[in-house]
Image (cartoon, rainbow, N blue to C red):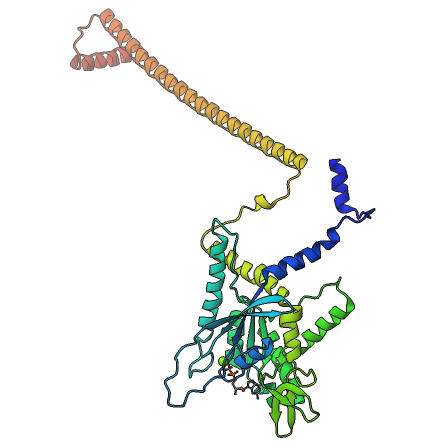
Length: 420
Ligand SMILES: Nc1nc2c(ncn2[C@@H]2O[C@H](COP(=O)(O)OP(=O)(O)O)[C@@H](O)[C@H]2O)c(=O)[nH]1
Ligand SMILES: [Mg+2]
C-alpha cells in the first residue's frame, strides 16, 4: 500500500468520478473575500509631483484633501516626515484595507543627501514589527503592515535620472518593490516621453537597480501573458493624475485635466499609462507584490537580521531522510569512528613500546658502566696486592710514598741488573 501511494504521487491518475477538490479555488475565494484584503503602498517624490493626486485617482477616493500650499515665508519642516493613512474601500462586496504611506519632504531640501534614510528606517521598522509578531508564542493574528509597493515619482525633466533618484532606488531596491513612474507626464510630448523612458531604463540597468518585474508564468493563457507583456513594456509608467471630472469636446464626462487646446484623459490609454499602472497595482499584480514582499524582500531582511544576531541554521534539519541511506551513513560513521580509535590505540601502544625500549637500553648502559667500573676497581686492587706480595717477597718494609720511591729505584736497579 505504502509503495503504491508513493508511486501515485508521481503518476497522473484520471479520476473516475467527481471528488470535489476542483472547488478548492472557490473555497479560497470565499475565505479571502470574507477576510478582506490589505495592501500598503508608499509614495515617494518631491512635493508637487502629484503623489496625493495620483493616489486619489488610483483608488477613486478623496484619500487626500486638497493641499494648501504654504506661503513662501512660512516655516517649513526640516526633515522627511512619514505619514500613513488608511481607508477601507469596497468594490462589488470585496473589501480592501488600503494604507498609503506618504513621505512629504523627500528631496525638498538644499541638502538631500540623507533623504532616503527615514524611508529606509520606516520600511525596516515595519519588517521588524512583523518579525516580532512571528516570534511571538501566539501567531494566530499576524498584522501585515509591511510596504508592498513603493511608487517612485520621477520629475518630468526629459533628461535622465538625477543623483537623488539613483541614490534612493539603490538604497531601497532590495527592501521594497520599486515602481518608478514619470510624474505629470502631460508636461512632456509623446516623443519626449519615449526617449525619457529609455534613458531612465538605461540608468536603472546601469546602476543595477532592481525594479519590480511582474513574473511571467508559462501555464497562463495567452491573453494574460500578452496583457502582462503590455504592462512591462510601459514601465516606467508615464502618469497623469486628476480627481476632477471635466467635460470633453465630444460631450463625455471624464477624469482629466483641461488645457486650452483640449483635455488629457486620465483613463484613456492613448493619453497616458495611468490605466496600466492601476491594472498592475490593483487588478493583476497586487498578490504578486505582496508575495514578493514576503518571500524575497522580507525573507532577505529577516535572515540577515537573525544572522547578525548570531542565530545559525542547522541545515541537517531540512534534509529529507531515507532510512536505508541514513543507516548506511550511520554505519559508515560508526566504522570510521572504530578505525580511528584502533589507530589511536596502535599509536599509543607503539609509543609505550618505544619508551620501554629506551629505558631498557639506558639501564643496560648503566649496568655496563657499573660493570666496567667494578672491573677496573678489582684490577687495581689486584695490582696493588700483587705489588705488596712482590715487596714482601723481596723483604722490603712496607712504608708508603718514600718506600714506594725507594722501591721503584730498587726495582729500576734491579731491572738494570736484570737486564745486564
Ligand atoms: N500637470 C499636472 N499637474 C498635476 C498632476 N497631478 C497633480 N498635479 C497638480 O500638482 C499639484 C501638486 O499635487 P499634489 O498631489 O498635492 O502633489 P504632492 O505634493 O506630490 O502630493 C496640484 O496642483 C495638482 O493639481 C499631473 O499629472 N499633471
Ligand atoms: Mg501630497
